[in-house]
Image 1 (cartoon, one colour):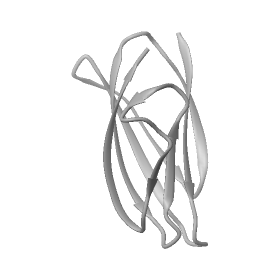
Image 2 (cartoon, helix red, strand yellow):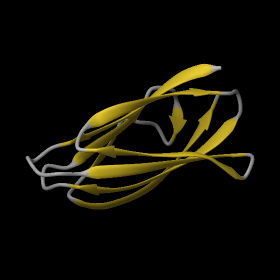
Image 3 (cartoon, helix red, strand yellow):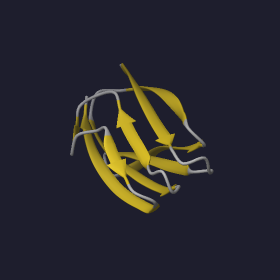
Image 4 (cartoon, one colour):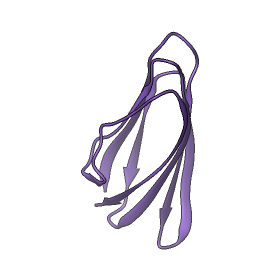
Length: 91
């Protein structure tokens, strides 16, 4: 078991949100949302995870960070607008 921290930081003084979906072995493992800026800590079992992020970045942009190494790597920076991004996490 490994603790993994997911964070989203939104800049620009307006509201942003990010929805994270984790899939493992082809099945939906968990879903959570970060509203405003914040973090979520999950304890994950060893394995390969597909992390899908759908978000909206405010005018100042957004930064998505996952505490364990991912492919592509984070932190990842986004300009204003919709965000559709996927990451692979191997624990």
